[in-house]
Image 1 (tube, rainbow, N blue to C red):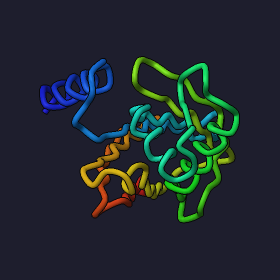
Image 2: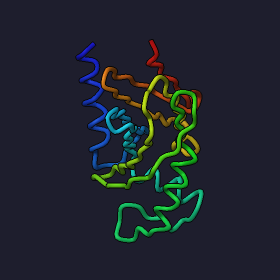
Image 3: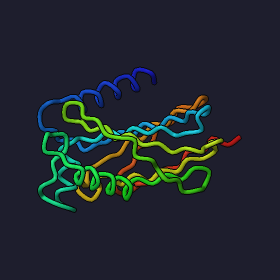
Length: 168
């Protein structure tokens, strides 16, 4: 089982670090519950060209991400899209993100989000429809880490929601 996890991580790492055009449509969202800060810290990794394509199709053909031509308007469209396509409910209650920022690493964009005021985490429901409107083969992988648990989900167009239960 441990070999399978390592092999999967190596495969995903190679997908995200490839410098050539890719044929895989995947995003990875890491969520960490930091109990002492009462927050969910979220990092979503998306291929820059894929998110740029969907934003150009939806909003403006002039959008340019991760280049010197990136504008505040481009980032505003990115935020709007992420907030529409990523929904999280904690303990049955919908939560609102704070957009912390973005960073670029090779051909991957990292979107940093945070949800605060989470004193206790019993359930987490996530709906991640990022890029489903662009690529039928898109898969969105979710990794959640708490002080006591690690869980993962794979979401796709037919199954965009997942529920993780940490109750006793």
